Amino acid sequence: MERLLITGAAGGLGRVLREKLRPFARKIRLSDIADLGAAAENEELVSCDLGDEAAVMDLVAGCDGILHLGGISVEQSFEKILNGNLRGVYNLYEAARAHGHPRIIFASSNHTIGFYPQTTRLTADMPMKPDGLYGVSKCFGEAMASMYHSKFGQETAIVRIGSCFEQPLNHRMLSTWMSHDDFVDLIQRCFTAPKLGCPIIWGVSDNDCTWWDNSSARYLGWRPQSNSEVFRAALDAKEAAPPVDHPNAAYQGGMFTQDPIHKD
Image (cartoon, rainbow, N blue to C red; front, side, top):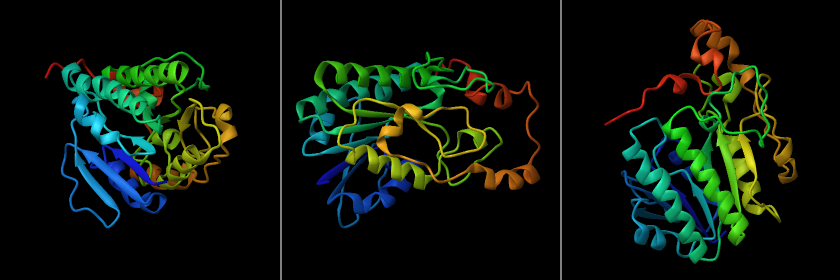
């Protein structure tokens, strides 16, 4: 790849992928409104507010792949979510349309389906059940990706990320965890597949207790290698599993289902 754009590159996951994806493109264009530090040899640093249409248009120019991690990543007020997660997604897709349709990997979320009980196994075509305004914003992003694919042929991998950390942080994440290495492999396969389309992909490793069926994305050849089970004993020793009526044991979205509607 000549130039890969990573939005939200100053975030926790963005910082990890900035390092791991560096060999994958001759130039990595990193964008955020937060401090990105110093540029490495093949990096370009661009401060960009995703809500600024003209700035996003310039940001996408010259890129042949986009990893879109940018925007608000937790439950916040509607006004905060509106700029980055709704207006920003529209700006990104319009910029991609203007600049030759570079493939997009859209970081969606398990919070698009957070109100499903943990007893329900989900396929990618089941109705959304968002657990908050953040989840609703990701539903909007998925709909935008679908519309631009149908109308303009814009290819997007919609990745419903579960919990992408070095290791699971609680018992719920034993089901939702995706390792950094598995995500990197998925990113590479999405950018190199002969035909991508606009699939919904569950961003989860090969965990024993996952709730999500990824069979519809098998054509990409992605086979996650990590399994959260290796962390179970350490988690059990650290804390007790939550009772069955606790949100982290009842709902796939966990505590996000209990967040209020934020006003500030």
